[in-house]
Length: 269
Image 1 (spheres, rainbow, N blue to C red):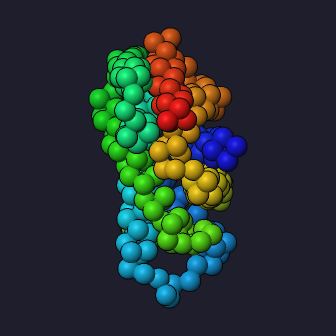
Image 2 (tube, rainbow, N blue to C red; image 1 turned 90 degrees about the vertical axis):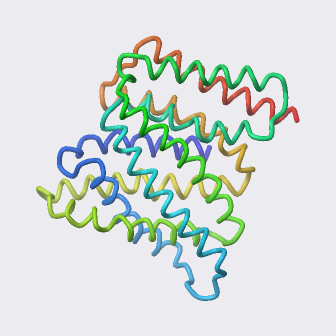
């Protein structure tokens, strides 16, 4: 349920963000999200800065840098191709994590299903933009890394300390993009919308996922993220009027089926 709520919040935020790309640009919008979300999470968690191990700080900094990079390439991809296509391609990162260490013959079937889904998506009418697809695949790799870093950070801290400090670091390194973006604001409505996007896209979903990842392994958590593509397609249709072609819908379905198969294999082992 935490993952469902997180995904719904995250994909709604991504859909709403496209409405202000014309004002701030994809990179500026992403940077402003961190600028708004970081103070909220830091006030909520009130993390201690002293007494932290070098390993903790290395994990927090790496996690924050990964989140910043992932959000940058993700928004640049969403600006070029449909939300459902981007998120489905992004999910290949977590799916790869889910496949690691699984040694059954059915693994080949799940890999084939995922590969078929990707081919249908990247060859479809709205999925053929080469730059958008490439950015989404980079986001996939960064998403897989972020899952691993989040899991590592939960073992080195309690509560939301690690998440709050990581998002705070992400806000610091994206500040050079956030400042000129803020100066481009046309009025209070723009900033209010960015604040809502920050809450829906970072503060709420990252908190829910950070809590959820403590309850399962990193691999199981990765596979549970298979809900994202389906919810992203729905969000794109509801908020942006993006309708995928039949082949692309089939591609999304194949990736989701592959993830469900990986989860079934994991449970069987």
